Image: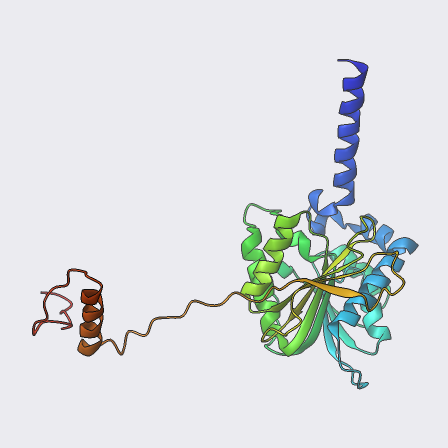
Length: 301
């Protein structure tokens, strides 16, 4: 092997390792990856604490809760050690956090977070009563559902269970803001399509769309009929002077229309004769009308 080939091979290995290292969901299931050591290292990193705070503040902003001073009951999906929940507490809201990693929840208990904690797998659905949650956020968690960590896991079914139960849990008109790191366009479409099929309206908000490093994606979903502003919007990149208000609509995404069921109850003899006349006018060969036309057959002879 030549020196140039060896360098290319080494570069490929390094690139592959970097990609894997940047995406923990490709290394192991969350309950295994976030063990006691990783959970403590994650929570003690000042950089991660700062990032989590900024993402949580942005998610809370996109929830667009009424500014009336009334505390809301919010859901933190994939709450981890409670870093994102602290932002909810600081804003005066009550919250419930759920996570699949026991180690992460243990750290949250040690940190004495204000929220109630649940050890649960969001891919199996959320066990809340209908309409009791006023809003939901999730930071860097939902993309884990796109991986089949066990032979029994089917990403589409897990996403269906998650979004279906989330839709039922939310009060009508409430929002869910899910910050995600999709691996590719297909994964983004899979997540968004699953949300639309569950009944949500909304789309994707992209912060810093032109920055590879700072790009952040949020699924902003509304529980109820689609709003006029539903779609995909982008806030300008870091070079913009106005980061908060500069948004442009890119495309509209509403929930797919359900196929209308045909009403077979009112299809009597008159309806059949009318249809036969229409076919005759079009030049089609249609059997002559008799006393047996449109007569219901017996189930057996």
